[in-house]
Every structure is written in structure tokens, then in C-alpha cells.
Length: 425
Image (cartoon, rainbow, N blue to C red; front, side, top):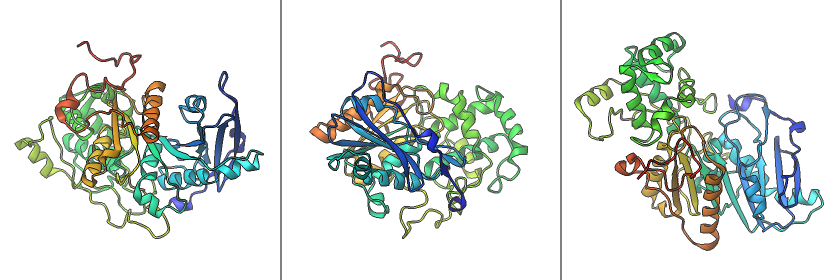
């Protein structure tokens, strides 16, 4: 379905102005292979290029480019940057990687077309937020290096609030709906749930007295299930569950497993999901009963197979990495939850690539709820690691007791955070 959709850049939205009180730069914009772009190069360029991948851009027909959140920091430190709108909207990570890579490869020619002769970048990094974090992680993965049509060897990556579990995010969405329906007494028996619009009010009223902020006793159980699906006991979860991102998750309920037409077959799979009512991994009799009764989704093995014409339809973040990767993720995010970090870490450990991975927990409540200094610190940590060989510190993400500690996330969260500041010792 995605191939049949038409998207168009809006040239009127491409021009961008200089940042006040920042070093002088050249700024260029245009359209490349159906994707709009922006490129900025300081006059005192340090020879390094940072590619920025934006987050989900919706489902409209117009594609738009975004500046990196750390734009000012980059140019003040001599970095050039480039950003693509991508040639397609929807959750099209394939287009995101290809179009970002194509722009990186066109960097010198774009400069030349605008009257500036530049050497090839000595280093090229990639950063991204949300879907862009997925793009950044997948772009440095060996699978993308092998299968992308536009091949770029990045020297490091900073995925922020990224979908590092790729298809596992959508498995979580499906599992959340199945759990909600089962608790409310209207369990799913087929997929997709064709009468979800009719069932939704019944399910919500069974679990929430005020959606999504106030739960019923049944809703308390649902809340615990979601907590365990999203990373386990941890600070900021309660605030995140009560916020707007929970409603956004519920907005995915009732859909099929094609990720809005990115896949052409069922892609959701909950066969590996374990529903839990507490932070103890040992299953109680009640948990065993719930899991046995839960309707299970099984992905079609052909839905997201490797392809001969480039990347998969839904590129994977396999953690097949050999360059520095520094991630940051908010603890309260229930839309792209902290469990994405845990899934990615397990993949890296299984492959023996975890020495290339540093992860940082941030005490934010919502999705991509970072301060500017949290983002710049992550980028600087990756850059120092790649350029000087000094591996930065990170957080343990898999140990349940560590993650559940009330002070978890304090180490790398901004001291300016309120009301999410760390508790008194």
C-alpha cells in the first residue's frame, strides 16, 4: 500500500535563517529525489558531518524537513549538518534511511552547486529522535550497510527515544489491546478486532474512571501489565501512564498488523509476550492463567523478510554494530517505552556487540521529553568516544532492582528538571 501513496515536498517551507549570536554558516536547501533537505555548514567547518533523522511525520501528502534539536550546539562546535524530509510519510523507516543516506552522499555536490568547494567529511555521524532514533540505529547496523541502495559508513550514532526494538514496538501495541480487552471481559477472538469502535467505550470504562489518568481496580491490574511490558518497575512510569501518551497508544488499537500499510501482511506477533502483574519474573497461578487465556497474534514470516531490492520494508535494529552508539530514553514514555532499550541491549549482548553501546536513562515523563543539555551531552559523549577512544558512562538497563530504584535515571538527567528531579538522598 505504501508504494501507491503519493507525497510532495513543499519548497516554500525550506528556507531557514541563521541562528543569532552563532558562528557564520552557509545554509542550503532544495529537493533531492523527492525529499526536501536542509544543509548547514559553518565557515569554520571542522570537517565532520552530522545527519539528523526526524521523527514520525504523520500521514499527510506533504513531506517536511526539520532541523536537529541540537542545531546551535553543532554549528558552535564546527559541525556541518544535513536533514531530509524523507520522500514518504507514515512509519517508513526504509525511506528514512535511504533518503538520509542519499543526502549524506550528495553533501559535496550540494556545496559545489552553491559555490563552495568542500572535502569529503572526515567523519559522518547520525542522530535521530523517535522514528528517527530507529533510523539512526538501523543505519549503523550491518544489515543496512549490506542491503541499503545508498550505502553510508557512519562513524557513530545517537538514537534518542528511539524505536530500538523495531517491530517489537507494534507487538507491544497489540499486546496492550489484548490485555485491556481480556481484563474488561470482552477478549479478542480474531485479529484485527473489527468492532473495536463498538468495544472501546466498554473497555475504557471497565479500566478507567477518568481516561487515562484515573484507573478502576481492574485498571490497576492493566496498569501493572503495561508497566511490565514497558520496562518494569521504574521512576516516572506512573506519571507517564496517566498522561497523553497512554491515549496515543490506545489510538493504535483496532488496527491490523500492517503498520498502516508499510507491510502487506500481518506483522504483529505476541507469541513471545509474557503478561505479568508484578515485578517478580516468576509467574503466579493467576498470571499463568491470564497468559494461557490471552489471544495470540502471529506474524506472517513473509511480512518483513529480507529483500533483494534494498532494505526490508521495516528495517531492523539488530544491534549488529561496530561503531559507538549512545542512546537516551525517558523512563515515563509509554508510547515508545523504555523496554526498547532493554530489547536492544539484549540483542547486543547476544551478538557480543554491547561494548559499542552506552545507554542513558532520563527522568522524563513523556515521549522524547528531553532537555537540550541532555541531548547535547549524549552527542558529545558519542563524539569524544569515537574521536578520542574514551568510552562514556551509561546506565544499567536490565537489572530489575537497579531500574526500580527511586534514584534511577538521576545520573544523566538534567539538574534543571522539575518536577522530575531526583528524590533527596
